[in-house]
Length: 242
Image (cartoon, rainbow, N blue to C red; front, side, top):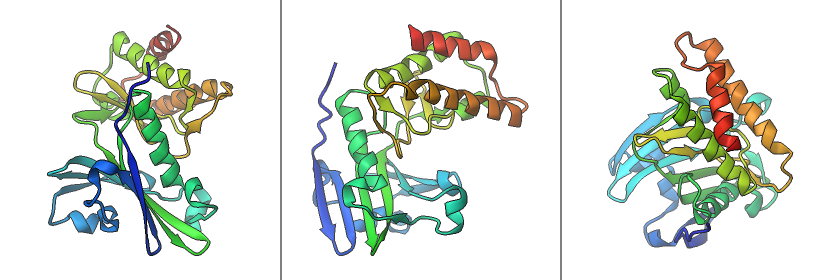
């Protein structure tokens, strides 16, 4: 069933910055919103993660948000940590992820609601930032499994959640144990849709699942008390195939 997300977006061009945001915040969003220093005396702010996974949790009168600056990884990070080649605004990573998150909300899929995105152009390059609403009382699958095991029902729920996205041709570019969240009621969410897209060629679906399985096996090898076993994967796949 398709439901309305209620998100109407507004975009603005201010000097070298392009900003898109939920129209309900018109008159409040500024380019400074994407600078952690701006929030230091205006909100409760917490830095989480490191490197490419670094983000900021922001708690203010408007709600709870996650601010993420797009960062390079791999060999390219040796050349530039956060600049990307400009090939048009609508092809920038932040713009595409924001628009995809709007679509996910329209489809009623369990993913973060987009709040705003910023792209700063510097000649033939750009930097980018994304702000989303924080999913309340949630933890990543990797964090949970480092502390406790999940039962078969919970693994099946994870599999059913992934299947919902696949049924709508949503290809998550980096599905791993860090990008799956569970809240206190056990509801499952997918996060971090950078470089993700709608792709009707279903051949990618098995590769996405294999990527997640490799992520779990890697954490199992790294962490002696990581609560994952082969039977858990079978339960996940039972939910996915149900």
